[in-house]
Image 1 (cartoon, rainbow, N blue to C red):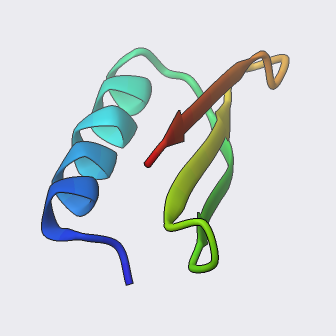
Image 2: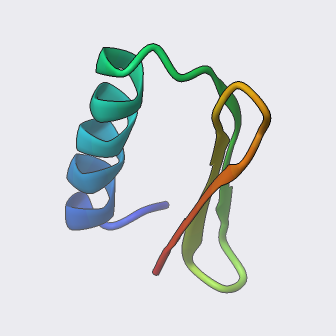
Length: 51
């Protein structure tokens, strides 16, 4: 389960991507490493990794 801070940051990042009309292709939380990965952009060129 992501921490509360990770959850809030993810919402803000997804909102910024949405405001910029950027599609979100993958949203993944890895419980082993406790990181969040977001793959976004028209050409899937935006990779966001947060821990």
